[in-house]
Length: 162
Image: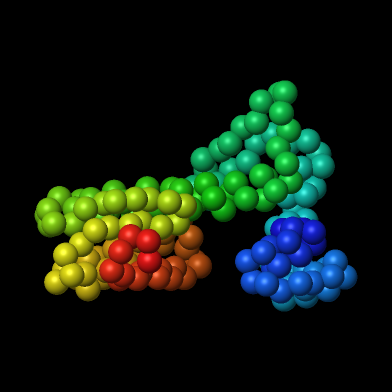
């Protein structure tokens, strides 16, 4: 996010109030620490400035903007990440369905939002299902993200809302 949005987000979500100068310094330090992210941003900015209307996820799925619309820089930066995540989540659900949802009828797929899969599970099966969900998510992501290691966080909670 840019400096102005960073100021708003830190104030709204964390009750931390930064000047634009402070926010700019944080942003600069972030890009110094994460040189690969900085290079990615520079590359995407160049293709955006050249007027591209196409973006690809890591698995090759493309998003095409019409001749009447031009993507924002933020859309071009986010699509490859969000599109790749969508593919991984779909693959994880397919693996989960073939390994668990069909064989253990007490497990219910409740909700999928962005990078979360919410299951309803009897307490006695929670640990087993958590391990299975972790395995399915890692297996779904590994071929797309290799050689980047895949880490998954699974939480067992008492309600859907956390």
